[in-house]
Length: 227
Image (tube, rainbow, N blue to C red; front, side):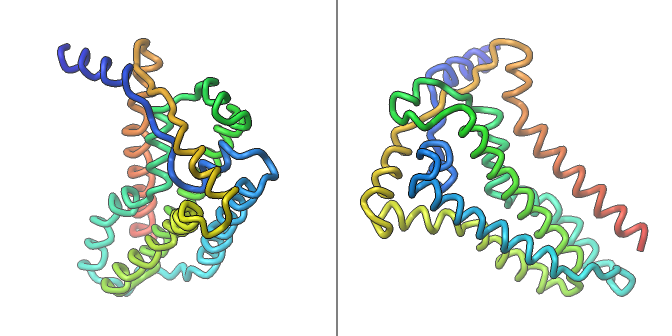
């Protein structure tokens, strides 16, 4: 009870800072403005890259794989989930942050619909990355290649962060840099869990993580059994 009271007090006083990535532009910047369109282009590039990789994956069977390779892939399943930064960010914010109309005083374009849109676009990004990582792992025979693919695909997740960092440094003009500074001023109130439904929502990040893990595990076991 003491711990619950302390956590409730902490959440009531705390806030969830707006993410420092291009998805913040989707929420904060006016539609069709330069920062908004910049974010759409960067996110679209990631979508295209993941879709291309997905189309090029060779869905080979596992008849020639030894027990060690299968074991390594089995233990890498939770890693494929945990390393999805965009997906984990969505899970975390969904469980801990809620929209507040007070942000409209900072940016009149930061509406609830755009708040949801940013979440949705980042969720698609994270799911595409997860599917590509997982299927690429399953279709790779050599253990070393599995780890090399992990490193290469992890780099792709940071494309939007790299471009956002350049915006912050002024590489794309003062207007873009100004919008990045506006994003830093925005924070979202935390869910406090005063009701049972709210308590359920605050645990949603853990539930979604384990659900995603279980789905990946089920797909892996099915693939191994069928082959």
